Amino acid sequence: MQQNLEFGSSDWLLEHQSNGKLVTKLTPPRVDCSYLITAWPQRDDDIRTEHQLLGEVMKVLLRYRTIPKHFLADKLVEEKMPLRLICLRPSKLQGFGEFRQAIGGKDGNLPKVVLHCTVTIAVVIDEIGVQGTLADFIHPPS
Image 1 (cartoon, rainbow, N blue to C red):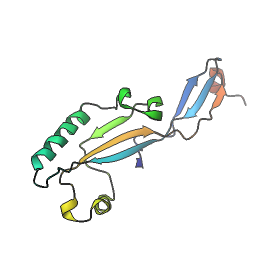
Image 2: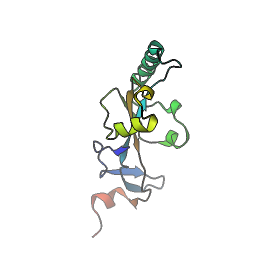
Image 3: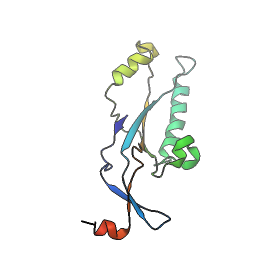
Image 4: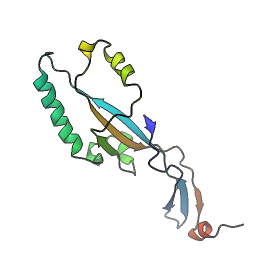
């Protein structure tokens, strides 16, 4: 995981309340969650099955720019910002060698083909906002 600096995290949002007031909140920081997707066939020499399976996964991942709501569960369903999905680009992971060592350590146990996928989520860190009317924000009281 790493913070996505492409999305401004110092921007302000204005939300209209039912009582006519406005609430300002900082835009939640966005975080890139990186995933490596691979397949291990039951037999080491079954490369065709491995490639077919990863090919089908790749087609599904490339179908979407954001993850559709019907695929989301738990708190992710309530996300106001869409969950951006980026696939098949070079990995930004720093410790890929450490990952490989953690999952097997020996070349025979390592995945031969890996798909890289990044999902960008918003991380709400502050629900407290400043309340006021539109006039208060345009002409703040001295």
